[in-house]
Image 1 (cartoon, rainbow over the protein chains, first blue to last red):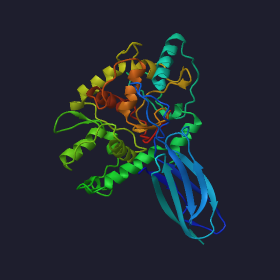
Image 2 (tube, chains in turn green, blue):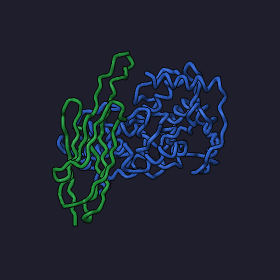
Image 3 (tube, chains in turn red, orange):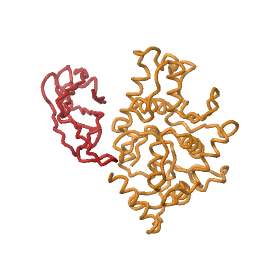
Image 4 (cartoon, rainbow over the protein chains, first blue to last red):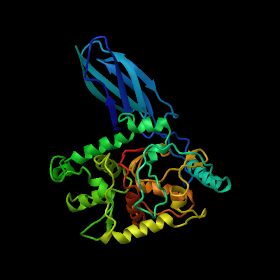
Length: 106
Length: 272
């Protein structure tokens, strides 16, 4: 499983626009490079990222080979109710990982 | 690979086209008068030679990708699945606290009388005190732990011992720095002492200080050790590079730590 760093507020006012940031540790190997012996380096990339706010999808992204290593995503959503923000990402082989943070809305 | 080819071209270009001289934007200047054998009279961190965007990437503690390794290192540091964790002896609030430890490396190990850098010290701790196998140099685990320990000394200046037992190592490291090598017949000092601030094609030559490492390099698209960085320079001048963790690189590391004396440790730094 790859590592993720998440920056999200733990408390917010109702109706407030909050910024969510995520950085996933991943090589994002393009598949176009060769090693020093001339052998092709197999492609190894993340394909999807999605963020759910209490189960509702608020942001999603599809990745391709041209995304740099350790993708950094920053996006916004409106705080409506207390609950869970789930960050999910899936690699090219379909292996899914996820991490959640709690948000308290007053 | 294209990266290496590009570097070789860069160095060839340097020999044919004279270094373009441009004024440096000096930000962080420290006196170097008491070290007469060092030609730069103004010591500057490699940070000052980066573009504003790259500087911002380093200073933003979320956007800086190096913290992925620092975070992972912290997890390994406190992990007690395989017995005693590092934290068991080195709790931040105890005598064994490692805050400031990275400033003193490399140093001469009293048990073996050999020069030991931070990576090796971590491995020695594993074999001597934790009864665990060594990590491979440049493995993700060793990089992460080194990143975490180095980060504990962020903002502190180097404080290495270069006399007594350490003197032969120091002299060896200094010699390597001034030794012409490779097909291009260049010494470290010719770029990093004599020509810093000038352009080497698209890049401004830095003073070659070690205070950002272990750090994240955009060219690598990953995190790496100082030895990997030194190896890149050796390959760049078409010299036969040494193995990571080689004695000569540790000696050079000692010289570089001393040479960067007044600069603060930035690890995890971001470099191009």
